[in-house]
Amino acid sequence: MTSTADKVLIIGGGFSGMAAAIELRRQGIKVDLVEIDPGWRSYGAGISLGGATLRAFRRLGVLDAFMARGAATDNVDICIPTGVKVATLPTPRLAGPDVPGNGGIMRPVLAEILAEATRAAGVAVRLGCTFTRIEQDAHGVDVTFSDGSNGRYDLVIGADGLYSKVRESLFQDAPKPRYTGQGVWRAVLPRPPEVGGAMMWVGDKVKTGLNPVSHDEMYLFVTEDRKENTYVAPSEFLATLKGLLARFPAPLMQQVAAQLDSGSQIVYRPLESLLMPRPWYQGRVVLVGDTVHATTPHMAAGACIGIEDAIVLAEEVGKGGSVADALAHYQERRWERCRMVVENSGRLGEIEIAGGDKEEHGKIMRETMMSLAAPI
Image (tube, rainbow, N blue to C red; front, top):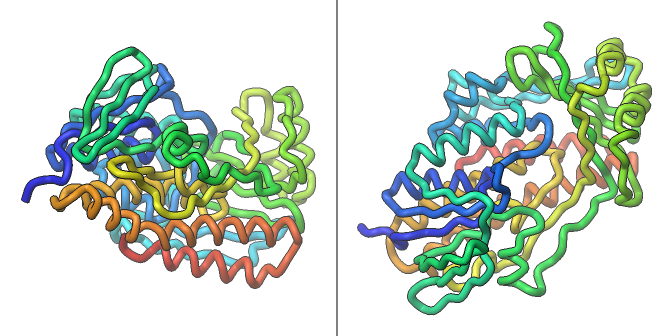
């Protein structure tokens, strides 16, 4: 059976774009990838990953690299602000019996691993370049690039993130990213022996946690309510984060607060969400990842569902048949799973902001994890 497409363009070199490139090349499809950032950088501190993401890494062939440079553990301990453990959230070993069900890694390290795999797959990567025009007909897509060159493709994949220019050009009425009323702080710290896995401390209005990201580092996250999406000056980061941690008298959290300094790579990000209604494609141009379903980090599943998009899309393209059928099947397989993650993560944030029902919060987390455990 011949592939649906012989030549594919991917616009955006983030996690989902790189995953799509790797999977399409595995099928022998010629792939061009353009990334607007000339340094192909990934910003941020650590990232938490569930078992479904590690399963996807195994499919992409990057699991060994992740295990060598990141951290994988089992379960998540849930504590109250004083440090008393009140529950343990199990994390099934979805990537195989030999791979723990939970993980963490520095975002730039994960980006580097995927970039190495993308180049090794034979993808033609152009950095500091994006599209300026997309025109399509029944047989292909003509693309004009910012460097003045042109190309014709059987399929174009928009993987350029939350503020996607591909989405904007394709769907003028598409929804805009929505601020959710929360922000998240992250920092990187040395990992003490007592942090053997992921841990969370849940307060009335603020939640904090730790997750190993390598053999000797961990990352701290703190989620807080902020009614307005206002700018926070970097000069305020350290004092603000220490103030938030003062609400958690647990000895370990106070030890963490004392360790924070100007070298802790503190970052702050307002939490935004987006769920684009169907269709996710128009003709021979299709969207994946944050371009259509950007989620808050409450279920640590944003990277997961974006990478899964790439895997499913490549599977459908590889089956042969028409582009229209391949994109329709991709959308059908992805819609409900991605909708569930975005809406359930958003609901968790609403409960936290309102100081709402912790039983509902726990139920949503358990049910979402069970759904993510299902095959894609």
